Image 1 (cartoon, rainbow, N blue to C red):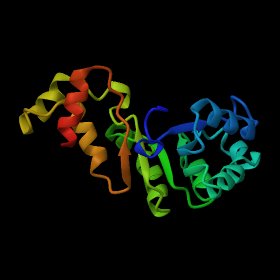
Image 2 (image 1 turned 120 degrees about the horizontal axis):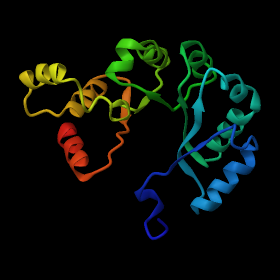
Image 3 (image 1 turned 90 degrees about the vertical axis):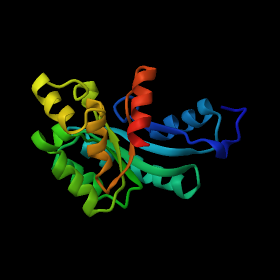
Length: 193
């Protein structure tokens, strides 16, 4: 990316406490390896119920907030697979710039995603969605379910229904869609167009 002006693109990366708890060394190495003086979107990665308190106690959040004040991080956030209680603890730490959350209509209906969304919404934390099509599982439904949806909108793909669901939620700012071929890219562009 060195041939492009740094202000013409965004860099996102993450810190995983369990991979290397030396957050200062990890951050400095990331800047060197990425050949940049700042990260646009920096995430505490993979917060679960089991490791939430470790992130809170490690000192890494305070360090990354210092790096944000110094202009070395533009937006500081976290990605969560935690339940409501642990998510609330991490969300209450300070005013985060964003949170990445697994959000799709299946988990909304059958999991705790709706409650997790409300935790972030109440704290005005913008959401970046991961797994909007649940790892592709919502791109292919039963013939009965697909038939019902095709009856309403014959030209919409099954994946587009999942994307449209998360797109309508006001706290959602970014939707990360895992695409593996040109057809999926075209379908997603058409959906958002």
